[in-house]
Image (cartoon, rainbow, N blue to C red; front, side, top):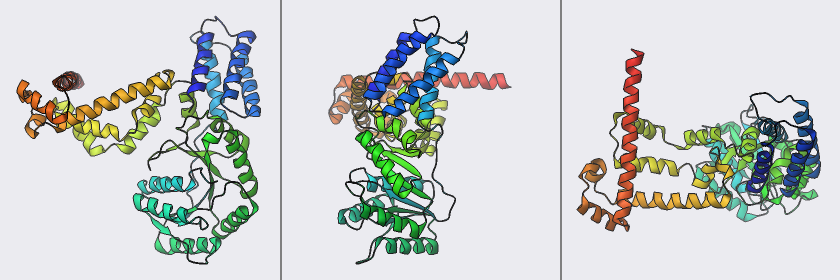
Length: 442
């Protein structure tokens, strides 16, 4: 989403590297470029104005350290203010009550019901007993959709009875949660194409009946400034406690993400970055600022790996690596674990330096990687169990049979074996280094 903005900012920082010191003129010139980039990204004009003023004051008010270049110093000023603009720290849901109540609000098309399902999956994985409540009673498809999502993530749903009002449904769900040991209740409320009095009254009545600790608005980040206006209206009428931004993986300019927290004054809890149930990430202002500035986001990448990768399989893999006893079954397992982390192009955005590569180039590299990964997986699956466990038995005749079975060429089989042998050499080096460390420690 932030490719154009990120490229513009990095170009500005690069131009500053040629200066020996920061002056008011070169700072002003750089800020002019940043102002244009932010406005083009559809960031609210008042937010841009305040941001530029604060960066200028900080950049000109600091002494440039001898060990830091002017460009680096200026980049740090922008990063600090960008982090501040996005909310500074991660703000989590209020989970102090038992059961905790979360009201999910949003307009049609923002992804409210889908996000409700993702949120249920997230809290369920964290060990909470979740109950969903289908409060969008005017749109039958919404009730059906919520039930399908609940089935996919393995949580229970309270559905409306004929003639039952939303507040009555909410009260019944709250009573069930308290008597049956649910510790988290998520209300998927009714949506509209715009905020109207009927919707607001219904939300207010439900809020007063269940007394939620969290009143969360789901906002489509691709709507730009309109999403900021929607959030302001909801906040004025219903008093929001937090926001979830959806479609942050889209092609829009991203101004909503940079404006909404500052304008509305309500923290962003989570962001939707895809269609799968696990594509809902905690929102960390400092990490997003780093990604926008082309510095990657290694922390989120590591957390994603810890959350999605099977620890038992990875521990077994580590043991095999240190033994120097790697085979094709281990390689296949590693490839399958990597697929769980998500699309390659999204992972590349989190790697330092990679955000500076154009979106088109990242997509090309990702497509090549996916094609090669599928090809290598097919080749390994075409091997016999003996060939996978004892790669040294694979001769020219076996290569031809494996290639035919995988629908590939012998050259592709050779490429896989070459990559495998390189990995084995690395494991042997690791093993030697471990032995040296053990001798040294004794």
